[in-house]
Image (cartoon, rainbow, N blue to C red):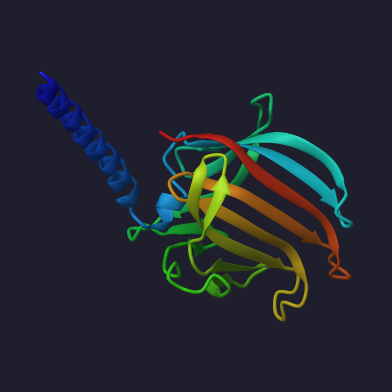
Length: 214
């Protein structure tokens, strides 16, 4: 009886170990594409606390915001009362799994081409010249960051809007976003600058509280 009990206990330990390894393997098998870091399936939603600060870093207010992917890949914005506030941007998943952003034309926005590069490097992935100029950059690597959802890999995207359509001397808006693998936008910071002096005017920060993926 004792031998039979030991064999049963050993069998359960083996099964448990196999289940744990299977879970780990499922996590590893997430495809390393831009879409994995920004899943744009209709109905996906993210809930944020937004903090406003002045040019001295003093907090001037906070509020809640919800982002929802609609059927046309627009990111719709809702306030804490679930009232529609407009849309943030239009995105599109390319056939290679990268994410493009519409700014008068489709620009490469989020991909995994630089995950094996140094985390200190910054790579220009797309640029647009028009009434307002845009640049999209990606920081190298995919560092793991500590979040309420666990220790998760992220890709960091930086975007710039410029006042000068030719010389790009004055930045109007600088945005940095951290995208978590398998979740989406986690933190975003907008730094807005004065159009005459190029001095920081205000900062707006988004921090993810919860999310729902379909």
